[in-house]
Image (cartoon, rainbow, N blue to C red):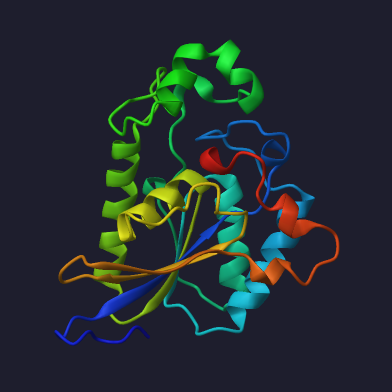
Length: 231
């Protein structure tokens, strides 16, 4: 359980994990809100993650994006941790990437120049052509969702399964000085303590994939999935 602050606030401990690898990650294809499943590597990563979490404090609930790669990861975690409270929420989905959906990162600069320019502009209010979200819109969506989760779980530990760019925004909101970009490997763990009373966020951990170090088949390296910001 998360401790109370000196001011009497009770924080929810929110353990945010990225889904396991997909074939699109491995091929550096921009997934966004497209819906590929985990590949074999991703399923093995997820089992290793679930084993780690099952040895830690039991969560009160598991929340997840409803996209297949996150949902399968969440189901594996919930089973390993013996948690029946499993909730799927579209607010935890990856950033909508508009016209960049299905494009290879290396090709997008030529095949979708306007969309790629919008994506790489650094302007947090810039939407991606084709219905894509701005970073500001993504942040508002996922931050509101985590605040609502924290309000339901004061003093409790919960697990949230989401996606690379979404988790980057979560970490950025918790600590604007944090450099989380491309530091969120597949099945990595980030930990945020959130006060439901003041909505104060404390970032404890970012992109921890130590559970993959024990494997000799290169899972830690492949965990980065190639597309860091759009998985």
